[in-house]
Each structure stands twice: as C-alpha cells, then as structure tokens.
Image 1: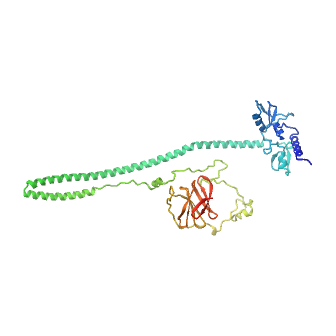
Image 2 (image 1 turned 60 degrees about the horizontal axis):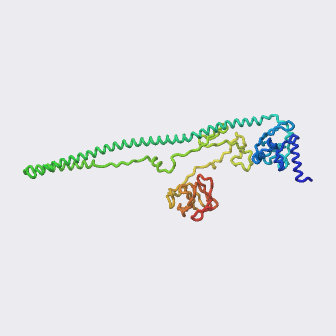
Length: 451
C-alpha cells in the first residue's frame, strides 16, 4: 500500500506527463517548496523561470536590475503563450489538466482528487476533440463589449445630466423665487394704491373738519368783540339786538360742531395675508424637496408604470412549476396558459367600504423638556391597553394610558425616531430616520429603557 507521500509524488509525475507528454518549464522558487507551478516569466539577468507571484517577490528581494520576458518557445518549437493565470486553478494554484463535463469546469489534479472523483465525464485537456468554432465565445465577448460600449455611452450621458441638474434645480428655485417676488410686488402695489386712496379721502375729510373749526373760531371771536363793544357803549336796543344775534350764532355753531364731530374720526388699517401664505410662512416644512424617480432608458427594460412613476419589471410566473402546497387557493384552476381565466373571488369575499368612528382625540402640546411642538410619527398598541408613541421633532418615546394621558417622562433618543412597533408583550422596536438600524427597548409601567 502506497504512503501519502508516494501518492503525492505519483500524482505530480502524472500531471507533468499529462500536458502534451512533455515537461513544461516550472517555477523554480515554487519547486523548492514542493509546488509545481508553471513558469510564465523568464528573468534573463538571473536565468530564472518564475511564476507571476514569484516574479514580484524576485523583483523586490533580489538586488540588481532584472530583465523579464514571457516564456514563448519550448524545446520542441511549440509556442507557449502566457495565459496570464487563466491556465491555473485559482484555489490550488496548479495547472489545469482535465475537463469535467459534468460540472462544465476545468480542474487541476487536486480538484480531480478531492472534488471530482465521482464525476463520470472527465477528459484530459490533451485528448479533447479540437474545437470547430473557436471564434464563437470570442464573438459573444465582442458583442458584450459592444453592449458595454453602448452602456458606457449612456452612462456618460447620465453623468453629463448629473453635472447639469444642479444648475437646473437652482434655476427652478430662482424661477419660483422671481415668481413669488412678482406676486408679492403686485400685491404690494395694489395694497399701496388702496392705501393712497384711503389716505386722500381721510386727509380731505379731516382737512374739512379743521377748516370748519378754524372758521367757527374766527366767527366766534368777531361776535365776542362786537358784544363787548355794545355792552360797554351801546344802547338798550343795540344790546337787545346783539344778544339776539349771539343766541342765533350759538345755534349755528352748535349745528356746525355736530356736523364736524361726525366727520372727525380715524380709520384703522391692518394688512391681512392670504390664509395659504400665512400657513406657508408659519409651517416648519421645507418649501421644496427632491422627488427621486429612477427612469429606465434601456430598451430591454421598458416595462414600467408611467402614471405612478414606480418601476414594475414584468416577471413571468408559471404556477404549474410550483408545488401544490405553495399555490394560492384562488389560482387553483390556473393552468399556466396565458389564455386561461383566473378564478374570481366569490361575491361575499369582495372587500367592502369601511366606516370609521372617532373614539378619542388628543391635541399635542409641548411638555417639560420638549424643544418643539410634538410631531408623532409612530404609534404602537401594547397588550395591556397602553400606547407607545415616538415624537420625531423632540427625539422622544413616551407612554400613554387608554385615556391618552402621558405616563412618566419618556425616553429621549440620540437620533430622530421614525416608527415604533410592539412585540412580545412589553418589547418595543424603534426605527430611526436616516439611520439604517433598529433599536430594541422594553417598557415597564411608565418607563422605557434600552435593551
């Protein structure tokens, strides 16, 4: 019975004899470590046959200037082409010797010994029938290269589009800004015109009151001076006449004052904004956001939903290939033929509209420690009737009872929470916005703590 070392030696000798019945040049350094690696490079300076790996080591660790060349000719005049490692097994770094047609693979002697011993259709490379259409695979590769060139051209087109889309976005912002500024300027001009009209009317009215009062004061002063002259030097008849004239003037002045008082008022003007503009200004939402919609430009991938903007590739499914246990009951009569009709749902199973009734409502207010008005993005209903909620703006998870009253102070996250779900009684799972991870927490009574 041969030992393990004898078997290894026999296997090596068989490998050398298998390839063309000749001994190809082997790598010297690999041979010293009992490896049979074909040499692909010749160092003319050191007269050394090397493989690619040993060539790199040789160039680094052996001093001097080295001249390397590919090994091309053997002693029999056969041209040896450097296949750049394609003729070696990547796993064992040994030369390919056999072809396993069962697995459609090239195998070395160790692959044959350890992995392909039970394969039936194995042939030596040297005994293979010459290939009739040698250029077939190369033609396919060239076609793929042509397709790759088309893909590269489209990629360059997309890259050019990326270079210009920033300017496009900026242009859209500027257009909207100019349009909004124009609308504001129009509103400003119209409001100022109305203001000028109101100001002119009010000024005219108040100027009339002012002039009326000044004229009244002049008349009263004249009447008072005349009364003083008559009272000191006039006759009784003149005094009677001046008193009668003063009474009449008093009546006229009273009526004039009443008339002037009616017109003596101020008008309060207040600028009222359009409700949509007011909501827009008071909102914390961004005025714009990017909507990302991938577009398929390849002619072979033209099936997508234009209305929704979501790509739906067509998948050819044949239920006849599935086991009976994996088929849906509603597709029991489907034969795999595209002309067959699917079994429809019974009328009683057709979904009906659902009516919802409002049971409770909670107005969110800032609690102690909150920096902003709460913005709840996720709710989870716990088995005992409590409700767990996550507040995105304040990075908070808090617990509420069935009456929607907060319990405890809650748990504050480092990142903004996005959604929450309850599982296995009091366990909570929280996803976070812009962070690709899920955190696990546990709730007990009024508190939430990290697991």
